[in-house]
Length: 243
Length: 227
Ligand SMILES: Nc1ncnc2c1ncn2[C@@H]1O[C@H](COP(=O)(O)OP(=O)(O)O)[C@@H](O)[C@H]1O
Ligand SMILES: [Mg+2]
Image (cartoon, rainbow over all chains, first blue to last red; front, side, top):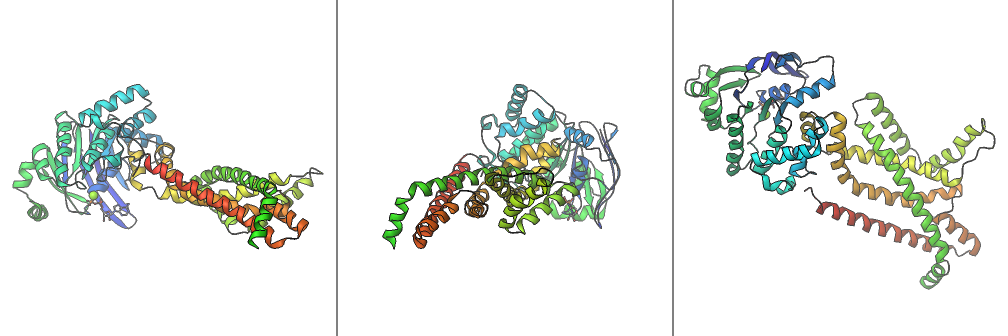
């Protein structure tokens, strides 16, 4: 589904990703953990080309998406297939929840308005916000905004969903509602890559946990194995701090 | 003094009000065209094309770094002089020169307002748009500009007020607006003090009215959506 080969990313002199190689299978849920600054966000952002990797290759369904000829059309095509949910929601504040969701399918995929609206309402229903269609983001709680953001990404019918600390900006009482939506997605077979500090979620939903530190994947395993029996000393040190 | 000024104002009210009307027309047309120019130039300022952004910056710097009166003379006397060497007898009416000079001037200031407005929108908005597969242009059109324009309204109102006052400089090329009419009254009646206090009061009324209007629009927009 997603194959990453020896991915490197530099920001100027700063070497942030130092050779990441991994394969993500269809329907797999992969959780990425690791200390702040280890390159988790940068890795996700490379996967939908919000950041251009310095070197290395990314294949999505067998297609090499790193078009170094700067072919923007193909970049947009990649992004259509890879949804991302940000820590800070990034909803469009001047649009209602419904409009937030239906806009991209209409203008990018040219879905007719009636169809896009119907799909958007179905998605709102799926994230439990059918009654908030006409609300503006400023009228929604953080948890509700993040659920709309998930629906917005799903509206493009992506093949992979990326989540970058989707609950980190939320008050504790709202974390559950967002995680529940994500668990539902996982159950429905969505391929997901999730950066999170929610170890309960990782244990329950993840097929595989990657531990990243200093721009490399230090260790990976099933959540049960990784949490109870970490091999690498850096993994041990990190887990002892957060568990 | 107060009494004589008031009676002077009253006596010449329709003459002055017609002048005020010309000033408002001139300013409205110029700022409207300036907003169109400024939006295009402002978008060029933030574009990824080095050529476009440098050209846009050059235009804004030239206009903001030279006196408006010089620009008015350049448009009214300078350019027609060049053209008339090819087209004998070429002449541009003061109204046309006035609108052209003021629009070009206003466009430069508006482009700065537009640029600042676009850059004030959080980077996350662009990323959200792009991550949904929207092109740069679509993200600008549907996501960034609508938000930027809400933030642009107040400074655009200030630009309008500034232009309402600065447009008085076109008296120098003989366009018949409020300032020109003040000059006509002065040379006709020699009531220097009354004339210019009266003109000042009419300008003041216009600027106060416009700033009220801007605040009203601002409040209406705050009610209709967005935090
Ligand atoms: N756009 C950028 N420009 C320069 N440095 C960046 C940029 N984005 C991230 N970095 C740097 O890259 C490193 C990894 O950041 P990030 O991927 O956000 O880590 P994480 O998500 O694991 O906390 C950090 O040192 C950060 O300062
Ligand atoms: Mg991060």
